[in-house]
Length: 184
Ligand code: URA
Image 1 (spheres, rainbow, N blue to C red):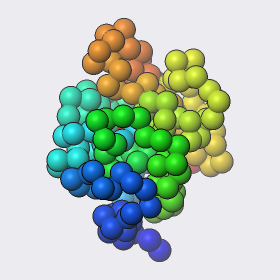
Image 2: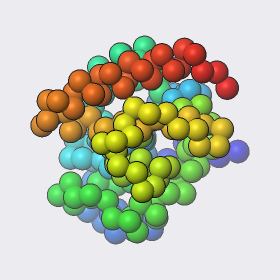
Image 3: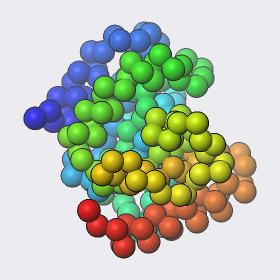
Image 4: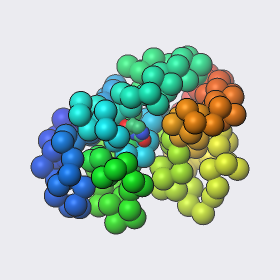
């Protein structure tokens, strides 16, 4: 059975797309190997690239606060991204980059086997709920196979559009309720 360290080791030497060329560090993800909740963001930014850790900048601070509203600490969850290397100039990850990185995400999901997948932003939501608009589906749980997928707005959107903060707060509170009432 693949462990999270095996997967991180493979990510560190991956050359399946061009993102590895400009990146300083891979950002494989981190957290509990037995997490009930796996959060999936978009891509590392400058701070994450520098430290090799996910969500360590301003949106990470906000994410920590949002997790508390769901009754969770960062150490309770596993946090990963759709792509594991930083796209240049923080551009959106391209479809072929997302596809090249997908096997790592699938291996992480298999290793952790979380009950809940919380996607952050439209790129992560698109993987499980294609052809949906994040502005319409945010906060609404969907069963995908044996897992509950909860698409959330990306925390970074609340940093420049304050009205999104209230939506994120309400959706994370609801996640807490769902986790208390749903058991696999
Ligand atoms: N935004 C993301 O989507 N992922 C990170 O790791 C940091 C910011």
